[in-house]
Length: 423
Image (cartoon, rainbow, N blue to C red):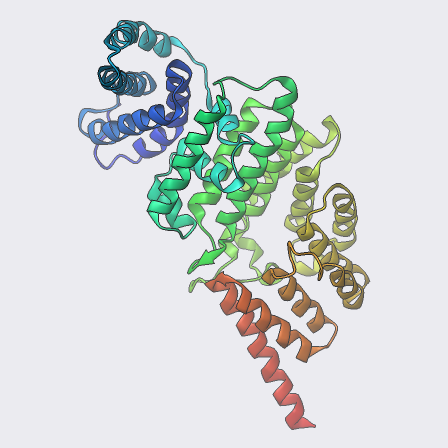
């Protein structure tokens, strides 16, 4: 099969193969930054040549060979500068054998690469950027656009992350069993943050960034394939699938936000819901239940309801009770308050929200005010609801969210004026 210039297969193929090739090159040459540059050059060459010449018989070996050549050129240049021509010659002699070994090897180093990008030496922001760049295959410009920062700023962040990896002396290998258990949590946390940023962006004109959420799902599938017995990996994948299945119903044709209770559930992706439920069902009996599995179970309960009024809120509240015992995350406590309000009344939910006012992690977050507004409306306190809807709108930089919150405030203000006129 040959690919034509308009062949849509090349981009997803390169996205899938790039982290594998990067892993091979890093493992071979032990220089993450130079290897990443070499693989990007190889991918660019493939994107230019394959549409014209057709796909090579072994695309991964082709990319590996080109990347190895780029690395050899790099080594030769460095060696000349440092008067170490002999090392460059040695690397050149080993090139053919290394390429042949890579061609025959089916080893996928993606998981090792993920662990490296999510090393504890990196901040979460740096880990996310490096993961998207090295494993996700996104360009620096695409990542900068997603997080609304200048490309130069993101380039510096990625450069610092690669330098931190170099300075830390991390070897390209899976961590020990103990380190692996600890670092896997970091990998999952980074993927979770990437998904959340894609599902509801922190700022910008659109509610979501589909490329980020889809990339998070793709990478989590890889981790699940490589770690099939880890129930929390399965829980995170199930959570993403069950949540992302609602994406088409979250906005109207104008891009305006539609809350969960008002969504057209016929637009939900039932095939994806079934897949997420199957992943979760297979994981639950295997061992101790963790936070990602519980969140996936909550998402499944929402997805199972044919109508909003059919939602099993007592079951959701029970799940949040368990989750709250495991996690100190204030967003968990906020969602627990919502579930409490749906089961025991808005007043009880508002009482639980008071405990979050002194939590600096969420006190100034727009979701706290938005939740207060919703519960105040349910309790019949329309003036307070208007005040909190407006406060929430002022705190979010996501335009569809802001417009929705302002629309709710305007709706209740109109209702209050009409009530005053009638009196």
